[in-house]
Length: 243
Image (cartoon, rainbow, N blue to C red; front, side, top):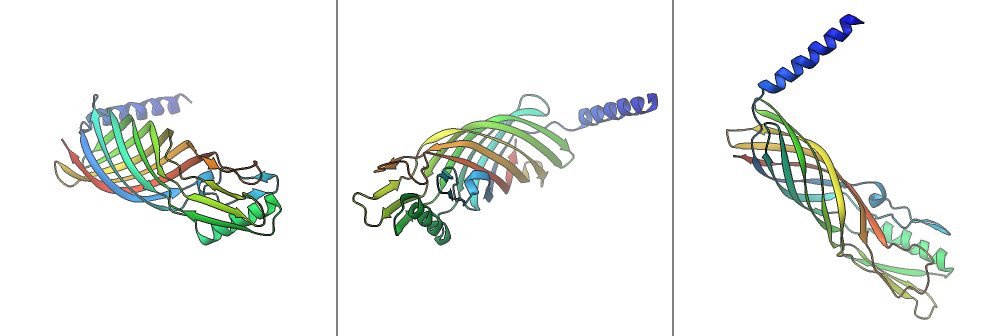
């Protein structure tokens, strides 16, 4: 037992010495592009069942994102990072529209529902937080956690027409609301020269969601979305400029 304890202390001491021997992390600016994978409730395409409708399914898709970031180190390996990202998460597909129509037909007990959708999920996030960076020669490992603002630039608008009912057209409006969000992730930076490098990242983003306005709803029957949770994973590649 004593030998294992001494070995563990020696290993920890070695790790500390190795980290101290590493180069200091460099301040940098970066630009990246990549894929964004909707997940959780945001990606769900389940409308629910009669009297148990799913009001958080977003039908969001895998699409693209572009972003910029910058980091400033106030300690050799610990700094603050800020990001601004634009994300697209697609539109409702034909199968999604059919699911929605069937759900409203069941909920309102009509023969048919006609559903029309327009627009896409597009959003902007502005975030900041601490970043730990561990340089190993040309390679730097970055670990970060951030919080900030999610702004919906648009979300799909849904118009529902119920057959043979007076004033039976209602709409789930496109959202331009904002909400708090948080993110955590890790990445690698590889130096091509003293100033220029490549970035590879994977980050998880989560927000309880933006408000959704509904118009001309006579009652709360059927699926009624008033707040859309947004969750996704970004995988990106980019260029970093160190200074």
